[in-house]
Length: 136
Image (cartoon, rainbow, N blue to C red; front, side, top):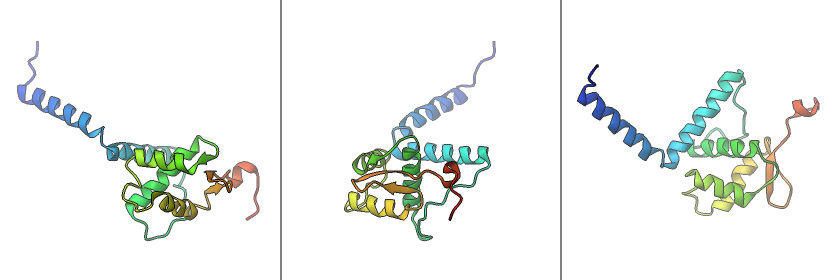
């Protein structure tokens, strides 16, 4: 029977404990989500969608836009408050002075991809290709 080196055993145990701790951090979950998004787009050979944001966006804003897309992908119209609660649970939008107003601005920047119903609910716009609409 082969004996495992105590150093390797201790190192594996330390790594497993550290990973368990890091998984509680919202940034870990955000990184996992971003890895999944990249994996999906790479697997499909599909370019990442443009969200209509400005070139000077911060990394947090870019992550927020990606999280909004991911969250709304499997939902219909969703209340802005629900979207905000979800983003905050992922560790996003936590530094905004007025999170509702900041989310409104971000949703507006995504106007090519997100639409509102005028009642504070938002969803991803149906793609023109999916609807058969070829007009620009």
